[in-house]
Length: 392
Image: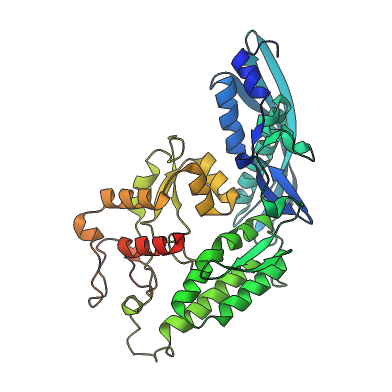
């Protein structure tokens, strides 16, 4: 290519690595794509941090729904990319569309606009070769290096239900069948520990279901993933408590004293602010956002994990993580043990007294941190043991 160095030409003529290709289901089709943050990283690697730039030349809201919950809107955008190749400036343009939802219209507009701009940028950079996603437009993907996973070779998504001991219970061709089989497995459990392992083995796929099929909802508008979470919470509560609700005026059950405790969800705004001042764990950029590790504790409807399980991520990688669906797999791809990093930040910020394990008999005083009402204690050592069990 005229203007590009020999090294740049060699990189642009190379193949896209399979590990950078993501997939999602759209209707009855399986779509392959590369994430926006990866495309930007590749552009920086090939062209240099000062060798290219992008400009949004046009953007407009083309649809908006403000009367229903959540609020939703759609944006269309056009982005121009300029690449400096020696004395030559190469200009390419791309168009994209983004859909966003949120509790407020502002959140919906922000999400939709960012998605539209990222989509347009990827299409503009795609014209420079396989590294930026051009290879994915070839049906046979001959410009992609590496073999596709067996479940995706025939163009179909296979939703797999895994038992508590890691065996495959069922391979479902559609997400509704997956939800039905997983629900049957949950309600058939008679032991709390067994149910917990079953959920840990399948929660990643449940999160992927939420990301890939946002349209999969009941008649009342509740997503199937939320239904599965509620079924799990109800069944887990029956198996761990094992007794009727206490009458008014009687003492509440101390769930931390049970053989299988319910995690305490500590709330500490000061710690969140401190984490947000740290550089991004992936790229080292600042400013960062405090991201809660959703897999660090059992999910509870309407509640995030404890504030002790947060790590700093820049806006780019924070969005990439949520788009990935399976959070644990995403962290493994980055080569980062997020639990260890969260624990380190918590220990550095808290005093020895504050991070000491609370006494089961005393009810567990956590100092200045404010736990959610009705939840019980779970200390980092307990979470580490559960992480080991989940990995096993």
